[in-house]
Length: 360
Image (cartoon, rainbow, N blue to C red; front, side, top):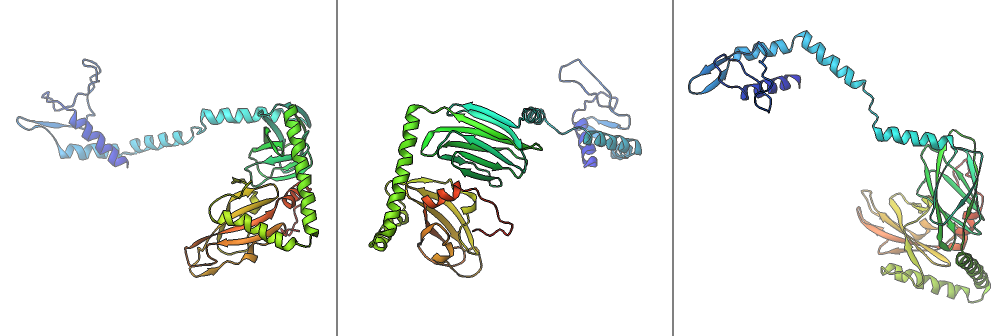
């Protein structure tokens, strides 16, 4: 590379030459009449009357040899060494580090905060330890895109354990009252656990909506218990499953249900299969949740998907569309109908991860 650069410099100098009768190349600045400097003394040129300037090949070889002398090489290596020692951090990185330091220094063992819906707050917390967030929500709901942290909800309390050094963004709100959302960013550091008390200002309309939502949930639980003891339970149960899953198979949404992609991390691969799977859609209603799972046979042989591969606690039914036997490269959708009340009850419990990795 250094040899190529030297030859390129020689070529540029030759193209800028003018016949002045001396055989040397004057180098001029863009502005005329300024900075005229002679070329290195090892370049000699012969002037030709008709063809302009010709570069002597022997002079070029001599010049290249001088560029390759130990003095030139030492200077190049010294320049490279100095460049490598220059700090590579950018002003943006420096600013970000200063902000993080200020956040960490604001840590307190206990913080009492009052927020309005839509507000954002940044809080330093202990890394690898359980931090407690108490809210005034009757039925706390929490959302995050972080898949490594452990979130445990119990009534209006949220227990958070952050297992890496990356900030975790949380959206907290009263379940059923989406307009009560607040954004909380937790910044982990080598600190003790933090006890946080957050009070979100709730309007009279929000409080009434929350009360109505809790009553509706209680009514649905009562209906579900009555259906469980009914003599016609099997027929009604089957009919309801068909009424829910048929529109989904047709590409529609069941009446009264909405589509989202907010799926818990532990349910993104819910089936016991050895081929590719990913839950990419979630359809939610008042009593049920339908997870839509994409399966693709990424093996070199045929593979049969069976409904029982996706059965687990809280699952009411499993259906396949369009096929169960997949040739290499073929895809199918699997619909998993879940009991929403069961999932909410599990989310409220204080869970301890088992050392064996086996679920209850």
